[in-house]
Image (cartoon, rainbow, N blue to C red):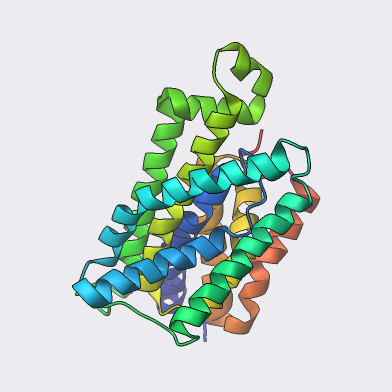
Length: 290
C-alpha cells in the first residue's frame, strides 16, 4: 500500500544509495568518460578496495573509510602502471578498441579468481560503531550504513571536480579528452596526462570499495553487479561530466529504490540498462553532455 511515509523513505534511501553509486562511477567518468578507455575491470578494483578495508578492519580495527583513503595512493600507483602496460601494448599501436577491451576483461577475471582462491566465495563484512545505527527525522529514517557512504561520496565528488576544474593537471586532463593536439602545442605530454588521469580514476576505486563493504557484505563476484550501473551513470550524466555523473547516480538510486520498494528487488537490476537504452535513444550526449 502506497503511503507518504513509505514513499518518503524510499526516495531518501534512493538518494543515499545514489551517492554511493556516484563513488562507484566517478572513476569511470574520468577513465571512460574523458579518456575513452573502456575499463570494465574498474568494479573489480572496487572489490579489491572492499577486501582491503575488510582485511585492515578485521585485523587492526581500522575504520573502512579511513582504509579507503589510505589505500587510494597505492591504487593510484597501480593504476599508473596498468595504463603504461595498456598504452605500450594497445593504445600506441592503435589496437585499443577490441584488444584493449579484452585486456581489461582479463584483468577483471584474474582479480576475481585470485580473490576466490585466497578468500573463497563466502561473504565478508566489516565492523564499525555506526553500522547498524539509524538517525530518524520524523518519519524518515537515515541508516548510517547509507548515510556515511553518501557523505563520503559527496566529498569525493566535490574534491575530484575541484581538482579537475581548478588545477593545471586537472585542466590538462579535460584538454586531452577534447583536443590532444592543442595540449601538445601547450608543451604537455598527452600520454603522461592520460596516465595521471587513469591513475586518479583508479584511486577512487579504493574509496568506493570501502563504502561498498559498509553498505553490505561482499564476495569476489559482486563487482559484476556494478558494471552496467557504472557505465549507465556515466553515459546518462554526459561523457566526462562530473556534476552530470553525480546527478545521474542520484536519479538511478532513487528509481531503483522506488522500483525495489513498490515492485520488488528482482526488477531493480533492469533499471540501469533501461535508463541507458532510453538515454542512447533520446539523448545520446547525456544530461550534461556537450
